[in-house]
Amino acid sequence: MVQSQQSPLALVVLISGNGSNLQAIIDAIHRGELPATIRAVISNRPQALGLERAQRAGIPAMVIDHHRFADRDSFDAALQTAIDAYQPALVVLAGFMRILSPAFVRHYHGRMLNVHPSLLPAFRGLDTHRRVLAAGVTEHGLSIHFVTAELDGGPVIIQNKVPILVGDDAATLAARVQDAEHRLYPRVIRWFAEGRVRLHDHQILFDGRPLAAPLSEEAA
Ligand code: GRF
Image (cartoon, rainbow, N blue to C red):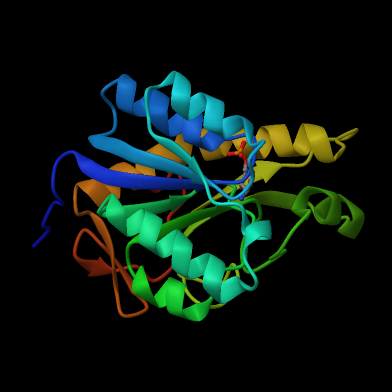
């Protein structure tokens, strides 16, 4: 039995930079393709371009600068308080470049998503496009996953391959991966809104059934 979430689904989006995924989510909502509302955008960096994108869309935008905190736990505690004031049903990490403490991650278990630019579990961490090219692998892509305490290690909902073309550099490859991110992230959030995807302990349920392997765009 698939139980849909509140409609529209209340989101808080966390960013650190450009915010192109945030923009894709805003655009999908405006086109009527995503039954969600972004209650706030929070950045840990004051100069993040995504803050302007939020303001342009009339979304409350807030900075919680991690430099102003003595340690990770106090930053995470302040971030959690700020997020919870908006009572989101889902927290969306969209280029949020911070490692999160286990207590913070536990608090949002099953209601926090991340998009990572690699075919996880390959190439966890930063700078994936350059590392993929340096490794000479033939496939690259992206993964959208629930966030758990293990860095880039949470259960993957969907994964899409992206070709590596002759002459690619990190920028061209990143752009191709991001195109796919912008298509898929709003779609996964819609599944969450519709109750089609959820996390039970550490098992993803899709349409009420355990997901044995990540979905792909074609399969979905
Ligand atoms: C994305 O490529 C995402 O995979 C990674 O950070 C990047 C953020 O880009 N986590 P943007 O800020 O959404 O443009």
